Image (tube, rainbow, N blue to C red; front, side, top):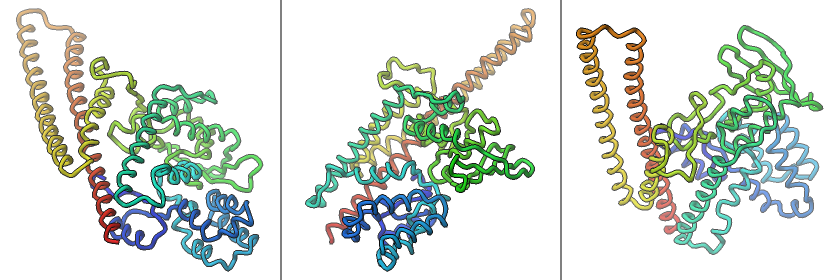
Length: 439
């Protein structure tokens, strides 16, 4: 994790696991897995589920769709009363730990969760077809690797679809076009849905205080469930009471409605998390995309015919080549050490080339200055336009050299992070296997 603790982590509803996570990652906000809780609830309340087919849907709606703590409490109490479960110990236990698994209590922390439905399905399908009740510990590790490989293939397919399909725009908004060029296909669809919903969620001014304006945003027909948005016109930032951006990293319809009212036509960089963009795998910053740059490499391109003048294309090409060593290095500690030594050696060579390039550019600038002096003495002086042209050429050369070096540096840093993550994952799997064998 590159020396940084994660902001949040999702764990099974187990006190021992929770204690271990709190000890190892004291600064990380942990929550219990809702899918696991729903599954355990179904096991413990089998009779209720069989006698009341709508109970499951009502329970998930109460948990996933509550906008406020008060709404959740009211809905939970009504649900238990309707099915005569007020004295059920399991449901009482879940209510007592509600701040550790119910979304409305966790919205101030980033979990990267886009959809409660898709999230539950993804967890349940991760090992689908790979594990069964008879799976041994030894087979578990092999099946885990197969499952990860299968999901990697799905990810590659999604990347291909993102790069080779053009999203269908549903509005004339420049912001939608901008988002289509920035986001992956799935994230753009999520953003597009929020943008379209702004048509049914008008923003009304409640208060103005300096650069900050407070708005009330409510959907037509649901005026009793408004959201409050505070917009800072100086910083071009807005905060919403729904906290969707804080929780998932996707800007909500309420803030977008305020942007429409304030005639904000383009998405501010603050609201574009790099993890959701087409270029998320190319290294660099985490929270924004500078300059809204969007570029991609066609899967049909190779190292022989790509445009080598494009830093992003060179970045992608080198990363794809280097990832081969990352994948091999993650398979065992011995190969990991060999790969890490090779990457460290490569880092030294890149640094040496960078220093040599800087010195070479300085020497070239010196020689050019001497040549200019001779030319000035032997002939008429250069015009101001010619001097500026020469200076622009030299500055451009220096800038391109520095740009190449920064790209190489970013690639190596990204690889180091990937290798550390793979090492951590491998250590965790080995430790889990040892604990399972002892049991």
